[in-house]
Length: 495
Image (cartoon, rainbow, N blue to C red; front, side, top):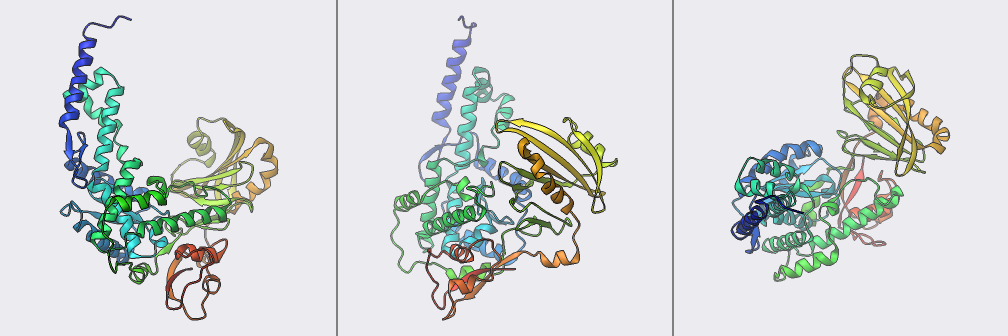
């Protein structure tokens, strides 16, 4: 192959620019003292990214949890850790998300998020501090800047000499290259960065006299929680949703190794903070919130949007951020979505001309569902898992809201499921006063263990599905078969 004139020299020139950039665009990491590559994200960029993405995060995760006491408590613990970090003057913003997923993460610029689901699982202030310290470590070590800069560099190299020249010579294409990598800071961190954040988290725990074993104890609770959730649902990944182990994958061994790597001295009379923590979270919502909709066995209830529906007996319901999913046997499923969608014409024109306008539907008809206009039609889908029949149903709940079902079955199961799916369709209705009184949020309530209290006695009225004694032990960080001691403060879940 004959290369065009100038291509070899162009490559050499760009590679020289790359070498110069790698040599000159490293900064001293404020947390580790080592040099790291952060060429494409300055500290000012980190602040800007955090400010811009913060409202998007709130929207994506259901907003901040509306509990001033809990928010103030989490902020106080977080700010205490920040004051002993390597960036004590950086303004950190700690937000409790109204999300039942057990999760925590950080954005560049000091924006740290923790879910109320995580708060409900943790049992001590030290465990809370361990989680927050880890996230603070990602910020102080500038892991997002490192990851983003490396991704932009790798992208530039993969796009060839033309983009290399534009990226490193400052032409207008640099904006395009950066935009293509703009989501990098929201992805999972590398194992090296996770280890570094754990090590820094332990350092911040020690500086504030918290127990340095707190992350390991919380991780044990999380593993027990995930196992019990899978057991109750009958599915290995019941909710198909991310938790803290998805964004921060690590094992007990790695946490212990990070604790050793922190090289901190044992803290005499270290702070655990069990009573203080449980007092702070007493009353918080556990599980689904009314604002996002409640899953109660086979029923999904949304009080603010004024509806409920029921799925067949052998289906499991899961409430996701974008849709409600019901899983059945034999690869059968139900998808429910919708919301503020208006359509001026009849519902059959919405079904065929808006929602499924690029799909050939058979048997399209208009139906009435408990006084609400609706339309339905069917189609056949093929994917790697086989051939499926899909029944689509669109319901006009009111002039501004349309809700939608997709019922999926392998073709061999369609006839057998027809009546079940018809019943689910016609179970969709607006709420009565009795419904609003019957379906309520669950909350955490703290109690002091009495002399005659046992796990069985304390947990017998908890509304959680499955083995109540196991749920009690998991949310209280107790080992299987163990009992709480008299005078101990514990959590129970109540309606």
